[in-house]
Each structure stands twice: as structure tokens, then as C-alpha cells.
Amino acid sequence: MNSLRSLVFNICFLVWSFLCVTLFLPTLLLPYPYVVKAAKTWSTGNLWLCRTIMKIRLNLVGYEKLPSTPVIIASKHQSAWETVVLFAFLAKPTVILKRELLWIPLFGFYIQRLGMITVARSKEQSSEDFRQFLKDAEAAVHAGHQIFIFPEGTRSQPGCPGTYRSGVGSLYTHLKIPVIPVALNSGVFWPRRGFLKKPGTLTLEFLDPIQPGLPRREFMRTLEEEIESHSNALLPQGVQKNGEK
Image (cartoon, rainbow, N blue to C red):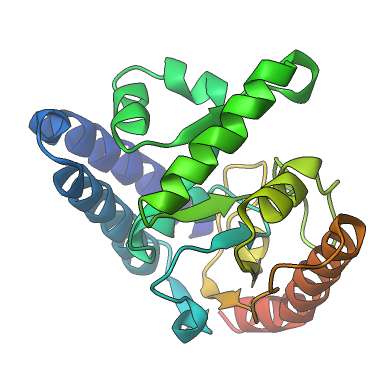
């Protein structure tokens, strides 16, 4: 059953994404709020597909902790799930993305129009790239946006911490705004690699904000401890609920 569900889901996801990318092309010529609305429609549709086809429901915890003022949202990254649904929950997000995503046909135009911040791979990043990264983030904050970043840079297996990269520490010390850690267990249901997805109740939890002013090393340690401990605490819950299906 999971094989059939996963096949149907993948087909519907690709069709839905293609329809959104093509039908919303006119929004690229309209003011920013219209492009955001298009992105939110795509993300909301992805949530519906997860719930309806894959029976992956969402338990959203701590959403009230998101303030109306700009913050840095630093999320655990286990799955493609969080990359395709995050716009459904954030008001004015500016996402830190890998630069190669700009090369995806049409999708790259949306990334640029939404004002996303793209970064080169660590080995390819110059000092000028880094200065531009901070400048772009500062401009986004001044415009009232939320900065969204995956501190690990890439997906990690549930229960296995990745390497927390320095970018989030640079944002914290430079922007001097709160950081809201995000814990999740998405990798239990939508694996990092692999075709099959599993039904169950996925939890995404917004944690207490880390206020500005900590020494950089202490901030990085606190951020990793918060995200990893809370994400690991969600794993037995995810496995149990998945097993009930």
C-alpha cells in the first residue's frame, strides 16, 4: 500500500508543482505580495497532498512563538518535506538557499522574485560572497522579513546530528535579532533518501527564542543542543504513531 501511495503522491506532487510554476508565471510581473501568495498556494497544496494521499498529518507546536517582528528561524533538516511546506506557515520569509537552485528552469525565477538569499558552496564562497550574504540578510530584516535557514546546510538522518555551519552564527552576531530554533521528525515519514514515504503524525515544533547577545560559540552550542534534543525527543513519538498505522 505504501508503494502505491508513494507513487501516486510523487506523480501528483510533480503535476501540482508544474501547474503552479506555469499558471503563476504572471505573478512574476506583479508586486511581491502576489508572488508570496502563489508560493503559499503551492505549499498549502503540498500539505493537502501529504495529508490526503500519504496520510501524513501535521502536529504544529509552538506556532504562537513566532513574533510579528523579524527573527531568524533555524530549522532541523531531515527531509524534503520542510522545504516544500514552509511557506504555508511563514508571513514574509526570506530563505537561505543553495545557489545551484537558481538553475532549475522557471523555479529559479521565483527564487529571485521572492528575494531569496542564495549562497555558494563553502569551498566556492569568496569573502565578497560572504559580505554580500550578510548585506542581503540585513536588507531583508529591514524590510520586515523572517530569515529562514537550515543550520546544517543539508539533510541528516533522524537521530544523527549534522555539522552545524558557521552561517547561522554569522547571521546571529551581525543581525542582532532573536533566533527561533525548530525541531521536527519529518525524516521518519519522508526519508532523506528513498522513494517510500510512511503515514503518521509528523511534528514540527517552534522552540523558545534565543535572544541576541550571546557569545558566538555559546550561541552555536545552545542552538545545536536545543534543536537536537527536541528533535530526538520527537523520534519515539513519530515511530510509535507511524507503527500504529
